[in-house]
Amino acid sequence: MTSDRETRPAPDWAGDVSLGVQAWVGETPPTSAEPRRRGGGSTGSSGSTRKSGRRKTRTWEEREAARIAREEAAAAEVEADPESVARKILLDTLTGQARSRQELAAKLAKRGVPDELGAQLLDRFTEVGLIDDAAYARQWVESRHRSRGLAPRALAQELRRKGVDDDDAKAALEQIDEDDQRQAARALVDKKLRSMRGLDHQVATRRLAGLLARKGYAAGLAFSVVREALAEAGGDDELGDHPDF
Image (tube, rainbow, N blue to C red; front, side):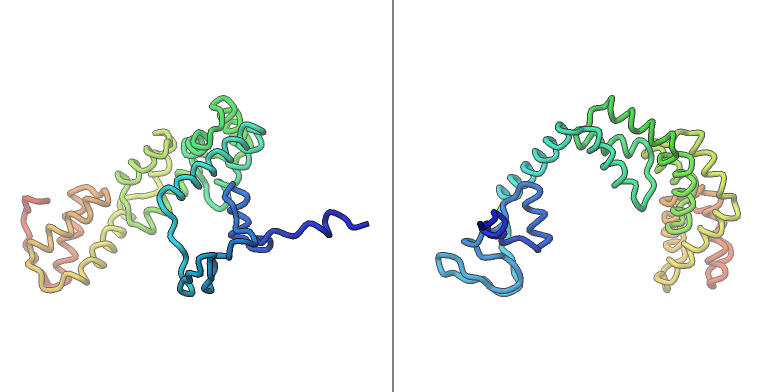
């Protein structure tokens, strides 16, 4: 006797990850009657051919239909087992990168997880140390100051947007002292100066000042760093008070 497994043909998308994902989220993968739209050229029933390596661009209606199908599939999954889905969302989001509690709450809400259940799980994740806004703030400040040269004022604004409370933000920002700020500001100015050769002194001063202001540096520190850098680069030592500073 022949089993169902032996008689039922495998779907055309079997073994193809991208097409399998389409099937999982509710999109219809190509059947044997439809040529696969992959690297090589293919012919449809009309006999038309497409150039090798090019894929047909989906219309707005097709993209919107696919988006709605994904959202409906996600909503059905949440409705069937909201707690398991919410746990998976949290674990997936936290994999490889810490997040603030507010960011995680927003993620759960966007996926349709009930607020009460979301709050319970966030509390539990906080209890076991998977959510720690104080540690998150310290990591964020250290990373953004080192990689982007941001000053405490700019970093405080970022932490506020991420929902980190003032006490945790203040403790994290204490990692950066005035010497750290001056070194970071000077590194930004020196890097920018390499592309400003030949500029008028006042124009250079204004642009460098603007750069440091956007990074959150106070005017006094910024002015001091810019004056020092320009003097060492051969600019006018006597900058005076600049109205744009």
